[in-house]
Image (cartoon, rainbow, N blue to C red; front, side, top):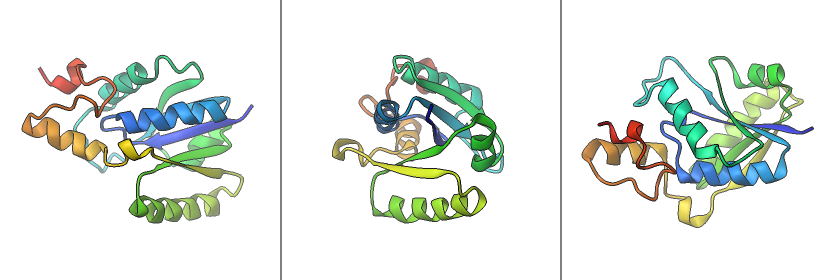
Length: 156
């Protein structure tokens, strides 16, 4: 059984994330969509809120599971028996950043492999930070997140 992890902060999860998760779920037997949080970073949404949004977004992907951890990605992979790290690529900046992370992860855990999935063109501009900015100024996020009408995102 090949297990993969799609790690991120998912603050919040976007339709671009979900598209990568769907594609990863077609390739791997099990995909963990895992929040690996850095407590030093501030987030707009709590861990519990982000987990709820992820669970809602992937509920129709049977071999995908929401999870979280506060340690190193490599330690998480070893604990879960994960062989592959899945990363989404939107642009050239992502390639540079992700290849640096891959180098570090390979140094720590050479048994792990990283697979890059290139975002479809229609999702390449979507980021969690863009969604947060739009929420902040009150602009609709319809079409950017899988659950734009979710009570957590509306901040009622």
